[in-house]
Image (cartoon, rainbow, N blue to C red; front, side, top):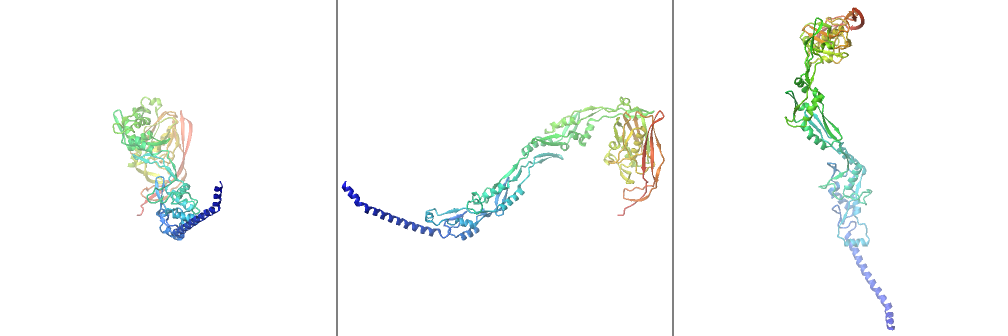
Length: 603
């Protein structure tokens, strides 16, 4: 025990000194090595930027900050400056990043690349690293420019929603393709550009506050374009519905004519005619066709052949013998196709293809004439109520125009309470309606115009209604007096401005019989007299006004003889049993008929 204690005590002070000495030596060695490594590291790293430092592939190792900024400017990658490809919906376009406020700040990037620390640990650590550093570029962002650039893109690529539609015009199917509405979200699009621009969003970016970047080259070369966010509005009627409608209805509907049959007769309606009366409506996003059967029935391409195809009723033709009404030719029934029947026949054929499949029957109904030998007396058409004849100088245009008006008026049946209209019955005086140019009063003098001479018929009808005792509703006299007409008892008409109308207040139907020759026109009213007689009593001419003299020019000018103007009143006196029961007074003012000579215009 003692020995052990003695040995331990003897070793104590000397041993501690040995350990301390060894530790000091070791520390000195480490310090010497570290110092050498630090010096070596400082030599390897250079003054500013370490060797092996790259920014987007550009080597700036061993350069000073200013030298690095110059190199980054001259050797800038394409992704920093080339146009960025952006996609808006299905459209792709290019956007200059600089115009959009996106650029790389080379000075700030060089500053970022400079060695962040000179402490021994960092310097020595880099001696044992791989020898390369990749630095993200610092991006400068101008929000105002970015928004302006995005708005410019929006102006070009935003579009309103377009509903799909189908119409029929001139025998063709006209398709309006459906189109999605598209509106660029400007705020989110700016964010997308910032995120996609190379290096955007590095936390050390100068004042940018950007998020982590999407990587180098996101908008250049063969990389995918930057998808800018858009709000899409879908049309109610989409393209699929348009395609369905065209396939199922439009194409077969206009694939050829439709043929209708009845009683061995055939009526062919061309596809171009069908198209004029097809309509398309939209309900709940679905296109639905409809046929305007009433319009189709009125269409000349259908109405004319259909009239021959079916044959309308023929009214009885009446005459007068010994003051009594007689039937000169009996009426006969006809057959007609109603608008509903036409629609029911045509509609199912529209979705068929081929001549045989597009042929089908149409229902007809028998139509009775209003006037027959059996019902003439029962209707109360028993006697001649009035008749009047006007004579006129022969002229080819008068023969044609008066004859055509008479043809259209003859056989008119006016029911009790109905108003008969000259213009509605005769129609517009055009060449298509059978009229030619003739002489008539226009602007206070004779001129050539379509339908000249028809006023002779109007005057004859007016006197027939005057003496039949029925109520005039509208009539007007000529502006100046024409000698062959009874003063104060004559009428003229003008299409669209002046009509001759009367109401049948006799209590029974009135049949109008009209005829003409080359020099006269006669109109008779057949029915039942309400008064035994109707007489005309003319007063004196007053307010006599002398004519003037004028010269006319132009091809339409007509020579005109002078005649004084005047006022006149005519009484219509109603009598029963020879006793006056009522009296009406009609006043007429005639302007002077100036003397007109025609001068040829110099050319």
